[in-house]
Structures are given as C-alpha cells and as structure tokens.
Amino acid sequence: MNGVHALVIASTVLRVEMLRVGHTYDLFITQHAPGLSDNRKRPPLESKILFRAHEGYLALDLVKENKNLRGSVMPAFHSRSGEVLIVPVEFEVVVKAITGAANCVGCRHSHYLQAPGQDDEDRIETKVFEVRA
Image (cartoon, rainbow, N blue to C red; front, side):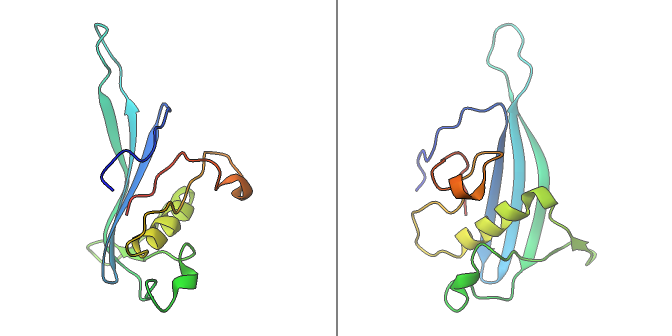
C-alpha cells in the first residue's frame, strides 16, 4: 500500500479511481500523457479528465451478501439536476472491476489487469493496469 505497484512504459496512461462510503461511490477517470517539450527539458505531464461522477449509488452489499456479483455490477450516477450520467461504453468493464475492488475489504491483490487488446483468457498474466480503490 502507498508504494510502487507496477512500472508502465506507455505513451498514455489511463487512471481510474473510486472512493466508496457505504453504498455511495465517487468515480474519477483521467488520461495522462507527456506534452511537448522545448529546450531539451523533460516534457510536462498533461492530464485530461475523461469522466467524473460523485455520489453514485449501488443498493447491493458487495462486501458480505452479494460477493458473487463483484466485477459484474456498477453504481448508477446522476448529475446535480438528477439526470442519469452514463459511463462511456469503453470504461464499463474497468468501472465494474473497480467497483468490485472498492468492496474487497482489506485486500492486497489485483482485481483487473489487462493490456489493451488482450483477450479475457490472457488477462491474469499481464500486469499493466492497476485498479486503485
């Protein structure tokens, strides 16, 4: 915990973070890539928010009663005006995985590791993405 979990060599990194308090969830998805450099200096890190949602709700208790549903459900998010916020389709799988990770109390194992374009059968062997809960 709070240490280096993986080294990634890539031009762009996607970070997915989730905070759970009871049945309420906050989700933050960002993209990080090096910017343009000048004068042979290290390029600045450019960050872009891809999706942000606060106080999403999931009525299921994934800690005790519905453990078998971890990784297959995700919370529903709404805007301040009450409209449904739809998680982009390309992020649904990782949001379901991080929802399961946020409900795994006291764990120290990985929940979702997959390189881009890999099949599900190869997912366990590749350590590229880290799900932070």
